[in-house]
Image: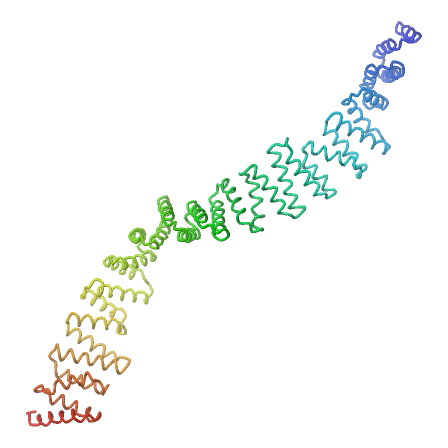
Length: 569
């Protein structure tokens, strides 16, 4: 009752502020169902009569506490906040209002207003984005909303959203320009700059198919961060496709700083080496790359070939040899150590460090007595250095290992020749050639020829005669060869074995084979004056002279025959 009287009193006196306060007190005592209606009336009264924004705002807020979606309260508050330039509360109210607006044009205006308040008055880019995004769902062609949305995305550094926005219009050039411009901004951090340039480069490739423009972006990244692995990886295929060896090598160097796996390091080092060697014509740099690859993995044959090739081109033998020695020392696999020693031996031999080469091959031979490469290399080097005793050992070992009969045969001849020539041991040489005949048979004419030579040099006439007889029995291929063998046998018989009669008969056989054989004829003539042999010699010579029309020699032969006619038989 007291409140009612006060209300009447204040209303008559037009004391609106007091009336508002007393009605507020009264409203709090009302039932919940009536309270909202009373709050609305109080707020309306204050708005119409008081003209005091703070009180009006407070009253309309009370309405919203009872009814958060009250349309009249939201409408009134939006006007009050706008007049008071209180932007944040205004934005909150407008956020609720736009959910209630049914008219599309009115809604677009409200969203435009809300977006601009967030953007220009509050600086809340996220709020602005929400407003302009919704506006564009209503009107995709709203250019002002488009521009505002792009700006807000940039301000928020919402690059994924910005790209999605441009994707709808495929304005890739504009997006790339935006990203590149932001990358060069004075307030842009190095990390942000790198991200923006990566995005721009990706767009150049995927949307514009211009890898050369992407390369510029990646190069800008490397200009600030020279060890950026992602940029180097991205540039590699671009430079490969463009055939730009100089730049490709530079990004390989960046990648090598990060590469930990030996396989990757070897690949990059070898590719760098090939570029230096074949494209850039820088053999020293190529050699350094190949050598580093070898140190990383000395097991790869192709890397060893690279090192050997460039060591020769750059005179880098000492470095290469040192690397091999280090690799051998560090090798835990015996097979790997063997391969490395063989290759090192080849390098040392190539630079004429023969004793050191022998040392490497000998180490292999001592560990692996069946290693043919080491054996063959030692054979060459021992012969070159005149280490014939060691060479003889190699021949023996090779013959033990060799399964090919023809190769074994050649080795046997080599061994025999070594005894004969270099070691000058006739007896061992004879034994070696005889072993050839024992194993490969009588067809080995070279062995027989060597035995002939050795027996004659050693004056082993009986052995020489036996050898000649065996060769005659085997049947030489030509009449001339047979005649030559018989002639030699006749000479041995006549000069060294005191078998003159046999010699005369052999000379006769020679002349039967080759009537014009001057040697046999002359030897027979030397016997014409020999007592007991002259008649035999003349008997052989007579038909020869007669056939050849040699009358003077014939007369002499006849005289010998006549003189010997009275000799006792």
